[in-house]
Image (cartoon, rainbow, N blue to C red):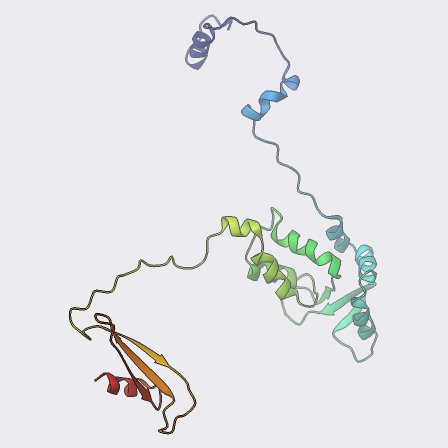
Length: 237
């Protein structure tokens, strides 16, 4: 307001404000937070990382979490068998052998109460990118193991609300309906239905072909021994 030679936008603001009678009071920037929402970009909220997911980052935490899952008790007994080559304890953690050449040789077995956090981390997190179930599953299976992982990943990705809102359906749009031209004479245009298979009749027939004229709706039908196109064409001719 006190500029000697205002120009451009400042000059227009000064002319607009001269229509009003008001007093200008200085207010420091740190106290002017009510206007920040209009003039500054919003501060992004920090992504919260679940404490349960952090449990799989250290051997000690994961070993403790595995003890909480009663379903892993059977696998632990199996791993103690001398004939078992699929499961093994490594640094106190129950692991399963990775038969896929990709990824680590031994994959830690994830308890049931940690699986949802892993799915959330590898699909919902900003660094995950809400990928499809194939890529999400590929990223998880190279690092962890639990029974039914593929089924869990498919169900989780298919029920993701963010993916349903933002991703388009991978299919072609439906085509336009094309009206059927009207018939100009009886049986000039007909509709055909093939019904069966029925119990064999005394004459050996198991099918019924029904022909309806689209002009006069007269219906004719005939029994058939089979449903092959050659037999149907003989009836129509």
